[in-house]
Length: 226
Image (cartoon, rainbow, N blue to C red; front, top):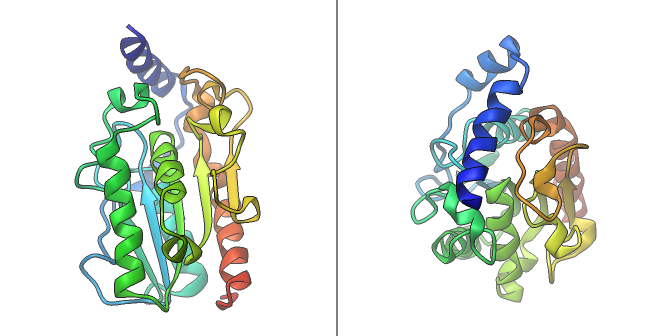
């Protein structure tokens, strides 16, 4: 019943959200799938992202591609490799109901990408992001990384974090200074439940703040400012 309620609230929030034509055009210009780490060559910056429940591709159709695009505008498209969490992470609604807010397969899939970045591109600066269930994926994945791999992750931004209440607004065993958790006023997902409100669909407006934060963490890790 709880999963059914979540599915209904997702649909209701989508209907209630205001139509923004400019945002729709921008979304269509961005790719919902990106495999620039797994299929491409190493770049100075690697951005690993986990999409929200029911989103398409491996980056999703909202804040994932937009954050990737923002980082590429700052650093140049050839200096940022964007990589979505796909594979075993199918982003179904039911994953939200599990103890870690997602499936163990999704967590392992995300961890494998961080491990790939460490082994394939040890000189790259890695930053991460997640939205909704994807934030739960990133929280669990980063928490469970080895010290060596975790130390390569310079910053993480979580939009509409479904685990915000349970973790006290942090990623366990990861520096709070390297973490930005964005929870909009009125977003019930950031509380102790899974109530999806229109506020949960508002995070496209927070992308500039998120990109600026990741930029600051990249600089702190010894990377360029632009």
